[in-house]
Image (cartoon, rainbow, N blue to C red; front, side, top):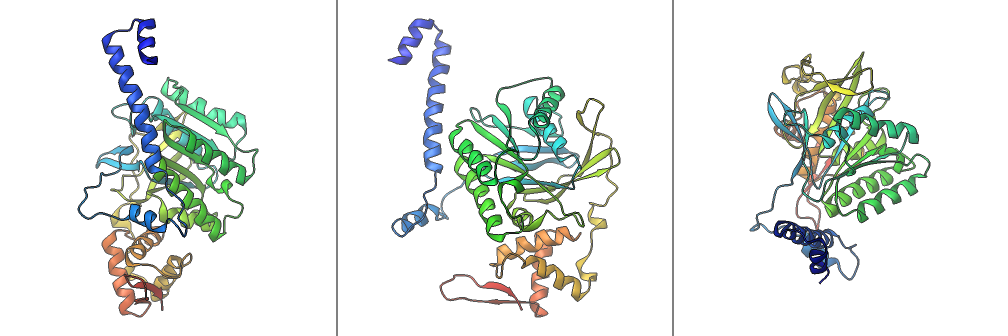
Length: 383
C-alpha cells in the first residue's frame, strides 16, 4: 500500500516502478543475508547445531569469494582483497602508508579501466569507511581530501572517522557497532590496528583482535584493510599482533620509502603475487603511481635466498619463529606458517618449498609429528 501511494503521488513511470520494487527486494535480501551470516556463540546447549552449520558438505559447490580489490600489472590481474577476508599493509614509520590509503580511496571514488588498482563492490554494498586511530581530526580530513582531489569526484559512500581521542576498548566497540549496523558496507580500512589493543605483545589480545577481524569479515561479507608498523630493526610487522595478523591475512604488503618514492611489495598473497610497484607524492600531496618504474629485481625468484644453502642454525631459527606463537600445528597450518616465515627471511615462499622443508626437518629430527587421542590428524611439534 505504501509503495502504491508513492506511485500515485509521484506519478512515476513503469520503469521507475520496477526499479523501486527491485530496490525494496534487494533491501529485504540484505536483511536476510545479515541474519544468515550472524554466527551464534557456541555454548553447552547449542554446540551441536553450531558445528552442524560449520560442517563442510563435500557434495556442495561453494562459491568463490568475490574479488573487490584487484591489481593490474604486466603479469595480468592479481587478487589483492576479497569479500570475507582481511589484508595487512605494513611499513616503517613515515613510509607513506597513509598516502597509499588515500590512493586506494581515490580509486574507490573514481576507478578507471586501466588503473593500477580496481575496486569493485556489489550493488547496494558500496560504502567504504576509514577508521584512523593515530592522527588528529585535521590530518584524517587531509587523507580524505587527497582522495577527493586525486579522483576529482566525491561520493557520500566514502567516509572517514578519527578515533584518536578514544581508548582501545572504545575504539574497538565503535568499529564493531558500525560494522554491525551499516547495511551497505563493502570495505573497512583500519589505519592503526595496533590501537585497538593495549599490549602489542600480548598473545591473547593478538588472537582476540585477529578473531574479531575474521568474524567481522565473515558475518558481513566485507573486506577489511588493516595497517600496522614494522619493527625498527627488521621488516617484520610489530609484536605478537603482527605475527598473528600475517598468519591470518589474505594479503600482506610492505611499503618502503626510498628517497622520493615509496615501493609497495607483496610479502604474502593467497592468490598470485603481483609485481612490486612504486608511487610518489606530488607538490599538492597527491599520491601518483610511477608507471615507468622498474623493480631492481630484489623481489624476483632469481634473487631469493635458497634455503638448501643455509646452515642448520638458520633453519632452527626459522622453526623457532614458526613456533613462537603456537606449540603445535596441523600439517596445513604448518605449511602456511613456514611459508610466511620463509618469505620474511627472503626465501622462496611457495607451498611446494614449504612442504619440502617440512619433510627435510622431519628427516633431520628437527620436527616431530604424533597422533593425539581425540584428534583426527597428527600434530607437528618442535623436537
